[in-house]
Length: 122
Image (cartoon, rainbow, N blue to C red; front, side, top):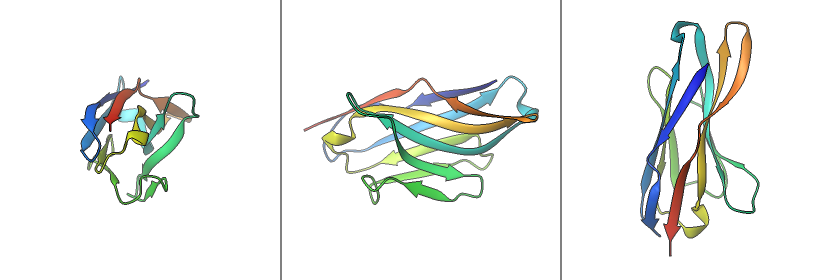
């Protein structure tokens, strides 16, 4: 089993910054391989959407709405993902979820964190 623990959410005024962190852990870590990791978000009344992703070769992708403002990165071990959010806007308000696509033995799994609230006030 892969556990994802998010941190860094909070309340910030428009134009401010937050840095989200997500650390992956596993009961049997030596048989778990993280293929890629990502951040999703879900605002009230909206579908969950992909915000940013990073693959094992460090290829990144960003939603158009956050390009130029957000930066996704991972650690050297590829078991943690970070989201630096700058120039935050009220429309960025959402619950942000860490995601990992992981291989455990011969199985692949979609793993989700519990979510962390980001609230941007005007």
